[in-house]
Image 1 (cartoon, rainbow, N blue to C red):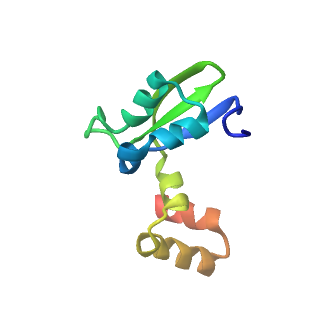
Image 2: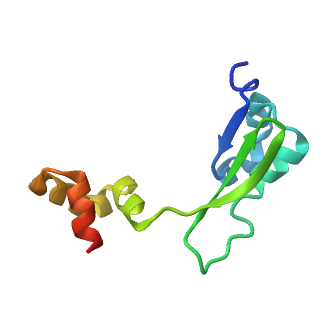
Length: 106
């Protein structure tokens, strides 16, 4: 009930759930149009740009938006442990995550 009545809803790519999305759409209180929007993420992405698409609903307005992270954000929020390890090692050596990001950005 709390999720269904929330005025702000953000959903990332749901292509893995497209065959059984109806219960999720019901949980979020999404209309058929909004469900189609959620399932349209990643369908029209331009491969020339590095961005992710996300469905955002605020009040009665909703849409699919492209979100692009800066290089510093990509370094800081990388979820792949293997790719993130050099950053973590440098941050530990410098004693600062911000310092490590600045160093990598140079």
